[in-house]
View 1 (cartoon, rainbow, N blue to C red):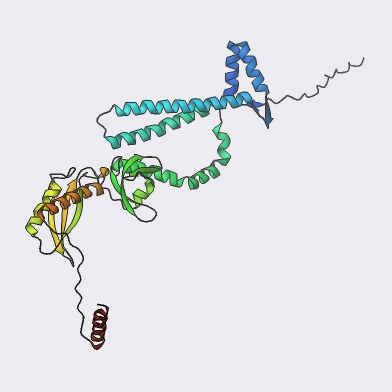
View 2: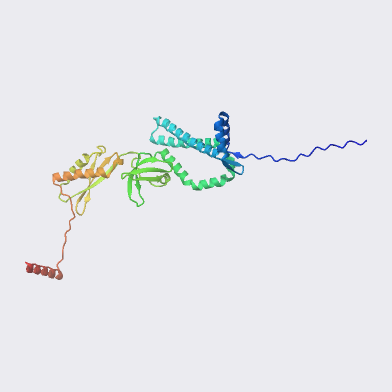
Length: 341
């Protein structure tokens, strides 16, 4: 009797397993969490999630876009609140001066913003390893494109660290035409410092320029600034009286410091005047230099008027050598004058 034929198992046809579409991880997690607590809100989220499209294996919808916007807004608000709290805590530390306060604020602000951005990336579930292919080219592009920005950032931190430039200092600046003026530093930013001049013009100077160029800081070690006011008097004036009047004019002017005391110097004998110079000191250059010099000049003018000191004016002596042509010209002019009379 022959052996029974072996039963063969029926062949199973391979089935295609559907590939699930990936979506924003944070959006999916939030959708599931909300749907568990409220069916009504969950249905609304499902409707928003249905309005979208698919690119490759990634699903983009109104719900995922809304979640991304909310996360960005939350990161921004969180970072702003964190910076505000950090600044409040830093200002309570009385042992730090203005420069150290500003430096601490900038460092803490950078750290808080970096942490907030990393938290936002983690919430959205963005896989940074996916950018590994482009990291080299992207980093190179960022390096070339933002090298000036990072250079100005590092320069600003160095300036604050060595205290060579700080808010409130008065420094000399030049405009595009080369005209030099002075202004007070209002703010030191990440990219540039803000300087306001006496005519309310605001200059933005990159921090890196202050590192590599010469800077004239009027209040680096002391806020006292010496101002010079040249004055000329006519020949024949009493020099001792003039020196006394000039000194009294400087001493009696507001904003002029008593210590160091003003001084008067005889600078030389010019073509039309005896030249003096009043030298005095002020401690608030941000309030202006020309205005206090003008006040001193007004006091000098009133003092000269009271004591009869003459102000100089140009004088020229003309010597004419005798010649035949000159004699003929004089004779013609004399004859013409007699004929008209």
